[in-house]
Each structure stands twice: as C-alpha cells, then as structure tokens.
Image (tube, rainbow, N blue to C red; front, side, top):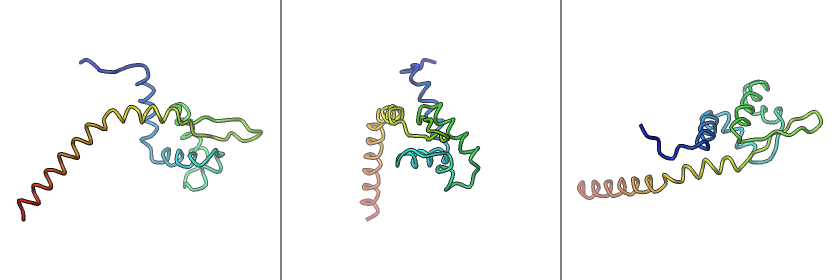
Length: 117
C-alpha cells in the first residue's frame, strides 16, 4: 500500500499525537501555556506523584512539545510552540474536508426539518 505524504517529519508527528493523546499531558501543556513551571508547580493540581509528572514531562520533551532548562536546583519546563504549530499545520489540511462534511450535514438537517413540518 502506498503512503502519500509520508516523510521523516511525519514520524515526529507520531510522537506529538501520541503525547497529546493523554489528558494529563494535555493539561500540563495548558499549564505551560501560561509560562514555565517546575515539576512541583505542575504536579500541584494533579492527584499523581511528582515522579509521574516527570515521566509525562519526558514524553512531552521527547515529542518536542516542551523543553527543560536548568535553573540552579530547578528544571523548569516551558512550552515549545513550533512543534505544536507543525501538528496544527498538518491538521489544517483536513479542514476543507470537515467544512464540507459539516455543510452537507447542515443541509440534510434543514431538509429533514422542512420535511417534518
């Protein structure tokens, strides 16, 4: 089977989408959108241990969604928007398909409503 548009960059997208598949990691990214934070600060709202948060951070870092800095004793994490932008760009290619599908669904629902009246 031929794969269209498969490049090395798509392999990176696999890691991005795998990282985004977890709700805890998405919540961590939302927190980091407000600014950098330490593991302790990130772990505060969750009912999981700091080591578990660290494991989530490693997944996000390997996917290129965050980067970690060394600041004395802390290793604050910060969002890397470029990688997220690549995922959004890939998803945007499907927008025309979804727009068309939703337009067709709207037309069908309007027709059904008219028929019912």
